Amino acid sequence: MNSIIEKRIGIPQLKERIVSAEEAAALIPDGAVVGMSGFTRAGDAKVVPMALVERAKKEQFKIDVYTGASLGPEVDHYLAEAGVIRKRGPYQGERAMRNLINKGDILYVDAHLSHNAELVRQGIIGPIQYAIIEVCAITEDGLLIPTTSVGNAPIFAQYAENIILELNISHPETLIGIHDIYVPGPQGEREPIPLTNANQRIGEKGIRVNPEKIKAIVISEEPDAPSLIVDPDEETQRMANLLLDFFRSEIKAGRLTNQLMPIQSGVGSVANAVLDGFKESEFENLQVYSECLQDAVFNLIDAGKVNFASATSITLTAEAQQKVYGNIEKYIDKICLRPQEISNHPEIVRRLGLISINAALEVDIYGNVNSTHVAGTKMMNGIGGSGDFARNARLTIFVTKSYAKGGAVSSIVPMVSHHDHTEHDVDIIVTEQGIADLRGLAPKERVPLIIENCAHPDFKDQLWDYYHRAVEKYGNVQTPHILEEALSWHVNLLKNNTMKKEVEVK
Ligand code: COA
Image (tube, rainbow, N blue to C red):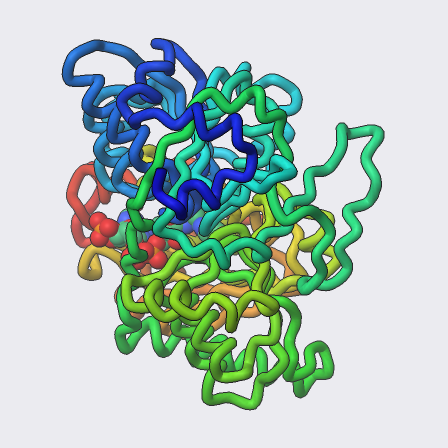
């Protein structure tokens, strides 16, 4: 046996359970509920899902797949296209999977990422017949050491009847020590989660399981699919600059210091541009308490701007993978990966006072946010962790360009066509046009800020026209709307591919 493999399996009896990916895939029965490791393309099961794709060429079967969040192409592209997935949760972000969901071929349970573990505990997700978990080692005392994400792997490992491990030897053994596995007890008997600073470790370095449940170990050398970050364009850079100036004004007002508060940022180019903007700035001693650590976080650690970063996954471009995993020792005492139940836990998000930055598809004139459904019907990706953070953060910020589809779509609309984040959870809206600070404002006070500061000039008159007619027709009520017209912009989009009013709704 390869000496690396020998060294990475600390329990001698488990070495006898090494099998091929095909043999492991054959264990999974038709109709099984399967929990897989993986979060934002990191630390996901890869070779067993591809063996399931091969199996599907010879035999018809379907499984329900639950994960941490989005996975690489092995599951969310190939497994989906092979027709193997009956139901998928709690998040995906891949075009092939999205198309199958919107065709009705895959059922999709789009859920807050901090909620999944509780659903597993209650048996709403489950019984889980198999957990498939990528690990970089199994220690002598029986701990599974995850790789580049933790996600829901601990709860799947705890509740699954059987476990298949993908021992991925392409991940360095030096990853041991970056994970902090704390699993809360049952509700009603639970202690407060003892985390009062993003940089604390409160759990074990790996996932404790009963080794008897490990039915197969498959050796893998497949790297994580690299992240596909788009470099900021002029408009995303402007949004990032607006946010940095907003933080400066908060410091002037005495509400923040130049250490800010721990930052959570969704994956995407604006978030990356904001983080990059910290590099040459006066901000210092920053902390990150987020879901996913992207390239920019490691650049900030290198620049001495971030002193600690906590998340549940590390998702990097190919170039950054080389830099970070080749020098992981350098980062080991500055980063920590936790279960998503902890990285996204409302108790911690509120206690630490996070600044939360996520993206919206559309925002309405009163500050409600739609992050998931195009024209209220078609799934884009899912709510992910945005709801966990938005409701509980100290400062909840949503960013979006003011327009989409080459200008045919306004991202500021009379009424959002799907509510992910209600007006009660949204503090700041940023588009390339400007910023709207909605804190402490009544709905009608928000309208001018959102239209004047954030809407695209092509749609401002149309938005004002809607609002004024709403007040005229239904009175100066708390939240004026013309209900029979509120979603007409989306109807127009579906019928005529534009929200512009010259093309009237027929
Ligand atoms: N109407 C219709 N389509 C719209 C739209 C709108 N108002 N706004 C954006 N889009 C389309 C874009 O055209 C683009 O489509 P394409 O892929 O076919 O080109 C797509 O949505 C993505 O938009 P983009 O502007 O590139 O934004 P993004 O990559 O930053 O993604 C979200 C924005 C909202 C889809 C994404 O951030 C998301 O899924 N968020 C929810 C989950 C989340 O917040 N996760 C992090 C939590 S911690």
